[in-house]
Structures are given as structure tokens and as C-alpha cells.
Length: 286
Image 1 (cartoon, rainbow, N blue to C red):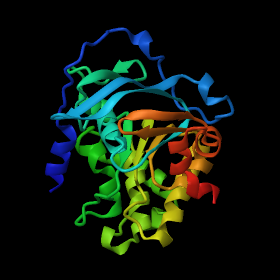
Image 2: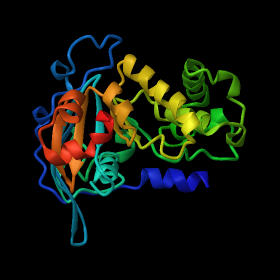
Image 3: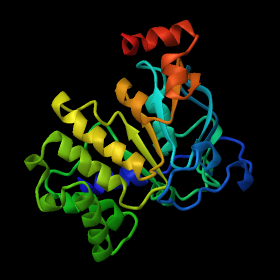
């Protein structure tokens, strides 16, 4: 089972697009810093999504999506079901190939067919709706598996990094526990630790609370808030509107495969003049 998932993670996706070998198209993302006091828009671009199009047969799901994410910035990707949020997240993680456009991680065009995808995945942490923990492995082995098997870390290095992360979230004492001995919220926190193993430049969070009991959502969202405070660069797709309003630096609202709004939570969720946007967020205003 483990080998099957690792093989899936390593499957290469190509993108039939015209590639411009110009590193200046996306400023290089520097190493994470402890302080995030500089406004995000003045920081280097970590992720550049440039005119991305994606179709399934005759159905065009993404219709020319373009936006940047800067270092230390938290961007919430919002929109109704079917708007293209999950498809875009899968394109960024190379689980889907784009039909046109480019995605830059720092100065690397990750839609280039020649790119080494395992190298890119070491730079992007991903957490999905489902925890995807292996039930026959304890917490420590679940967190270290990809680092050891895919990225070829030695056991001591992987265990040291994993314990550092688990201690940070108060799960160090559960390192030898198995998934069925944990709550859903604890399992999702373990999945987030796994995504942070390689100190990624970008963290993708794809509806990470949707499979949780409502009583457990808070502990996972608290962890995301802590990551934000630590300066982690995050792109998150979520239906937790109040959380997005409070935690995100910027909101990108998708509607039918295009960007309907792109601005601060206040600009998009509170003060938009677009009738469809106002209707979508009407429950937040009471």
C-alpha cells in the first residue's frame, strides 16, 4: 500500500505549453524568515500562476487563471463547488497537467515537462481533505515515510525533523501511536506535520477540515493560525469562510473557472460591489 501511494506521488505529469526559459518571470523566493513584518506584497514571489487553462474533454474548468503569492502570505482560494478550486490545487501540486499557461515556484517553471517532479514536491507541502495516514504505521513512520523513501533522507535525519514538528504541535508523546488511536483532528495535524517535513517553500491546504467532526475543526484551524504566525506561505482552498476572513491576507474568489475577485478579505468578502459576490458571502454579514 505504501509503495502504491509513493508511486502515485512520483508519477510525472507533462504540460503541452510553450515554455519561456526566463527565470526573471518569477522573482526567486528566498529562504523563510522568522519575521513577517514586511507587507507581503513587498516580499519575493513564491508562486506565480500565469494564464492557467485546464480542460477535461470539452469541459473547460480553468479559463486563464493568473495571480501571485508572496513569501509569508496566506491566500484563501474560495468559490462555490465546481468553480475550479480543487483542480487548480492539483495543477499546482503536479497531480494534473495544465493545457496552457505556466506555474512558477520561485524561479522554476514547474509546468516544464523536463522538470524533476520529486524535486518540486520536496518544495511544496500538501494536505488533502482525507488524512491518508497508513493505518499499519505509527505516527512517526507516517510523518517520515515520504522523506525517507522518496527524498532519500536517512532515518536519523528524518526522525529528528519529525519529532521537532510533532513536539511543536503537542503530539510528541503520540509518536508511537497508530492512526486509529487518534482523533480526526489529531490525524489531520499529523498530516500537516508530514507536509512540513522538507521545510517547503509553499504549503497547500485543500479543504483540510471538510472531513472532520465540527468539534474537531478548531484544533486544526488553530494550527494553521500558528503556521501563519511563523511566516509560512500558504495557499488554502476552504469552505470555512469565517476562518478565511480572519486568517487570510488575501482572498481569490473563483467563479465558473475564472477569477471573480482578488483582494483583501475586507475588499472581497465585506465590501464587494459585485452582486454575485455579495450574495455568495451574504451569510457572513448576517
